[in-house]
Image 1 (cartoon, one colour):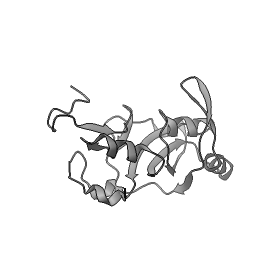
Image 2 (cartoon, helix red, strand yellow; image 1 turned 120 degrees about the vertical axis):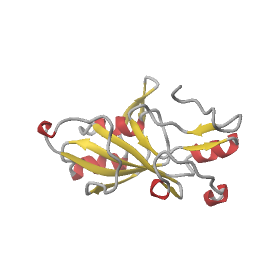
Image 3 (tube, rainbow, N blue to C red; image 1 turned 90 degrees about the horizontal axis):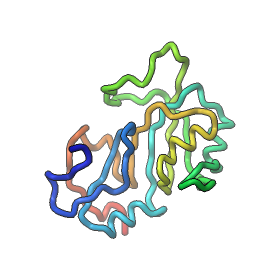
Image 4 (cartoon, rainbow, N blue to C red; image 1 turned 180 degrees about the vertical axis):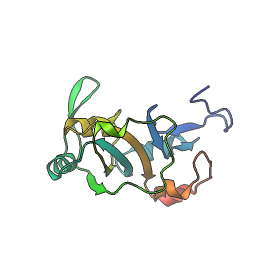
Length: 164
């Protein structure tokens, strides 16, 4: 069944989550305090985001400064974050489900690095500035980068790399 961790030690939990349409790095632990610390604002989470349209500098500045999104039915202003325009990233795995046809218009890519993690936050942020997310890939959690791991593979990590 999707989402089960039967092949891991009892008590294994994901650190954060990826929604059904998102891809990328997912860390697992059996230590609740490790999960708490990584999910805190102490640790950056970086995403490569493909958006609908050619994102402009005004939208990027809005994202950096914080935008209003809905969290649990209440208005929430996101914290200051890092946003950079990207060329189409190399070496991304092909999607099994096509996002949309090219005839729908251009797309662009940005890197968004946040220190918080509200439900569907990055998707809500890009929509708030008029550039809905088409593809979302978590590429980094703190010092751990997706490029260091092969897709679908598991690797033990030394938690000391986080510095707490």
